[in-house]
Image: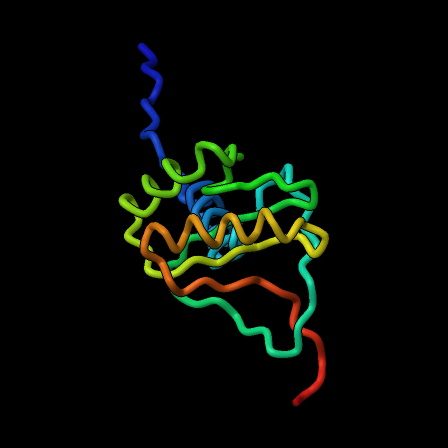
Length: 135
C-alpha cells in the first residue's frame, strides 16, 4: 500500500526581512520631523538669524486665518489656557516654539505668548525660514 510522504513545513524568512526593512526605512524617513497639521498651510517668514530648534519643546501652529493648533489639534482661544496647562503637565516643557504663518494677525500671536508666559514658560521662539547669506 502506498503512503504519501508527509512534507515538513518550511518557514521562509524573505517576506519577514522585506517587512522589517520597509519598517526601518519608514522609521528613518519619519524620525526627527515636526508634524504640521494637515489642515494648516503655513508659510513661515524669513530671517537671516534663524536657527534650528533643538530638544523637546512645546510646539504651536498658527494659521493665516488665526486658527491655533496644539498637539496637532485645533484649539479655541477660550479653551487655550486649559489645553496648554494640560500639555505642560503631561510634557514638562521648558520652552515653546510658535510656527506662525507670515500673514497671521499680531494680536493672536501676542495672545499666545501672553498665555504661555502666564503658565511659566519664558523661553519662546518663532520658527522661520533661514534666508541665505552670512552676516
